[in-house]
Amino acid sequence: MAMKRHITILTLLLLIVGTLSAQESASYRFTLEDCIRFAFSNSLERKSMKLTGESLETSYQQSKQQRLPNLSASVGQNISNNANGWSTSGNVGVGSSVTIYQGGNINNTIEQNRLNVERNEVQLERYDNQLTTQILQSFLTILGNQELLNYQLEVLNTSREQMKQGRQRYKVGTILESDMLLLEAQYYSDSNNVVDTRINIENNLLDLKVLLSMDPADDLTIVSPNTDDLDGLKASLPTEEEAISLAMDYMPDLRVSDYDIRLAEKSVDLARGNYFPSISANANVGMGVLSFDGNGNKNWYNTPTESAGISMSIPIYSRGQTKANVKKSRIALQQAQLDYEQAALTVRQNVSQAYRNVVSAYNAYKVSQVREEAYSKSFNAYNMQYQYGSITTVELLQQQNAYLNVLNNYIQNKYSLVMKRKILDIYMGNKITL
Image (cartoon, rainbow, N blue to C red; front, side, top):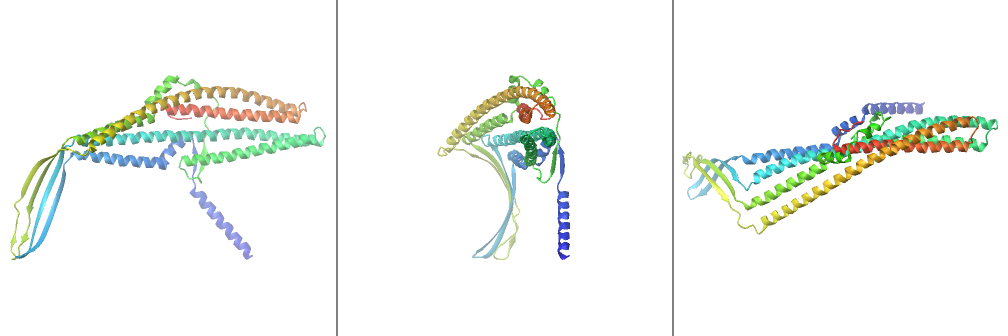
C-alpha cells in the first residue's frame, strides 16, 4: 500500500509539472510574413545591431556640440605656514574656451559620425535580407516536406489495401507467398518513409524556431500558402537587365561599400587637417575669497580679475607622422574604391545567375509537373490492373516506386522554383510574400 501511495503521489507530481510546462509554452500559427516579422522583433543579433546604432547616434549628436564653447568653474583654498604663522587664502573662477578653427576636423568628425549612423542602418538592412533568405529557405523546406507527407500518406493507404488484398489472394492461392511478402515489405517501407518525413518536419520546425529566436518548447504551426499555380512567378519576371538595374540601385552590399568610400574620404580630410593651425579663444573671470594671515587678520579679496585671449597652435614638424597618416588614409580610400568595384561586379554576377536559375527552375518545374501527372495516372491504372490480376506484384511495385521518385522530384522542383524566384525578389528589393 505504501508503494502504491508513493507511485500515486509521483504520478500527480509529474502531471502537475507537465501541466505547468504546457502553460509556459506558447502556441503560434504563422505565415511566412508572420515568421519574418517575429524574427525581426526577437532576433538577438538584430537587437545588438540596433544598440550599436544607438551608440553611433549618441556619438554623432555629441560631436555636433564640439562647435559650442565649454564652461567650467573652479574653487580653491590654500593654507600655508611662514615666519608670521599660519595663513589661508582662496579663490573662485569661471572659464570658457571655444575652438574657432581646427583644420576642418570638427566638421569632418561630425560628418564621419553621421555616415557611421547611416552605414549601420544599411548594415541592418543587409542583415534583414540574410535573415529573410534563411527563414524563406527553412519555411519552404517545411512546406515541401508537408506536401510530400500528404502524398506519402495517400500511398501508404494504397499500400495498406494492397497488403490486405495480397494476404487474401495468397490464402485462396491466386498469388505466391513471395508476392505477399513483397506487398508487406512495400507497406512497411512506405510506413517508414512517413515516419522519416515527419521527423524531418519536426527538425525543420526546430531550425525555423532558432531563426525566429523562438523558444524550442513553443508550438509552431506554419500556414501553407496556395502553391497550386506557379506560372505567375514566371509571368511577373522582369528582363534580366531590369533585374540587374533594380539590384544595383537597392542592394545593401553596394550601399555599405559606398559608405565605406565616403568614410575613407573623411579620414583623408581628418588626416590632412593636422597640417593646418588650430585657433581657439578663451575667457576667464575670477576673484579672491576670505583669507586669514598669521596674526589672525582677515581680508576680503573681492575685486574680480577678467581675462580673454586667442591662441593659435601651428604645426611645424611632426617627425613625418602627419604625412604618413595622410598617405595611409589615401591608400585606405583606394582600397575602399576597389572593394566597391568588386562588390558591384559580384552583385551583377549574382543577380544574373539568380535570374537564370529562375528560368531554369521554372522549366524543370513544368517538366516535372507533367511527369507527375502522367505517373500518377499510370500508377492508378497499374493499381486497378493489379486488382484484376492483369499484372504481377513486381510490376505494380516498380510502377509505384517510379511514381514516388517522380513525385519527390516534382515537389523539390516546385519549391526550388519558389525559393529561387523569391531570392531574386530579395536582390531587387521587393517585399517577400507567399
